[in-house]
Each structure stands twice: as C-alpha cells, then as structure tokens.
Length: 118
Image (cartoon, rainbow, N blue to C red; front, side, top):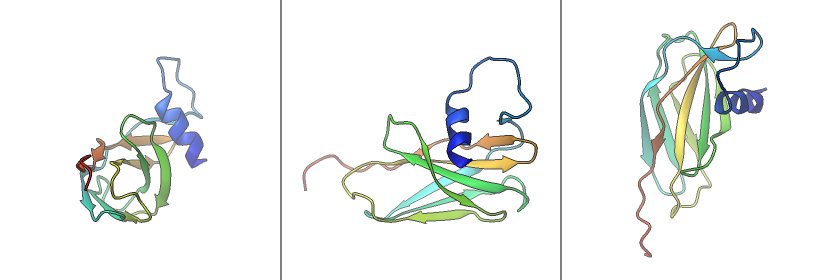
C-alpha cells in the first residue's frame, strides 16, 4: 500500500478526481532537517497536525524517484536510516498521511556531500 501511495503521488496528473486515489489535503510536514553522519542519516521534521497523523518517509538519490523507506505512527517526528554509502548524496521527503486518502508532502531535503576523492 505504501509503494502504491508513493507511485500514485509521483505520477499524479490532471485527471478527474477518484475517491480512492490519494489527494492533497492538510498541512505538510515542515522544517525537515538532515543530520548527516556518513553511513547514517537522521531525518527530523515538525508535525503539522499535533500528533494526529501518520508519516511516510521516502528517500532516493538526487534525480531519482523517491521510494518509501518507513511508515511511522502519529506523533513521530524523526527517523534514522543506516547502512548508507558515505560518499553518495541522498534526498528525503516526509509525507503526512491524513484520513480519507488525503496527504501532504514536505519539501525535499538532500545531503550535500563532497564528490571529491578522499
């Protein structure tokens, strides 16, 4: 279901609304901040709904389509992922999942790692 949501969000067009298709609704998560620790990245954000919505964290390499990496319960405002390549950049977005197939997506936040050889 999470993969389907991200696929639908990434491929939305101007087609007529369908009540079963996720649509924009509610406030998006704000203040998305990455704490880059090389092989680990911690993502934090501000909850726009005061602990009343779940969140989906999506990530990808810059220029690639975001893919879900975790679904988190209401009130959660951070996520940490490990096992990453410390030489590559990664982008993250946080999706607030509201009721009735409504969602709101944060702005992307990306690491800014040097591509210079160490």
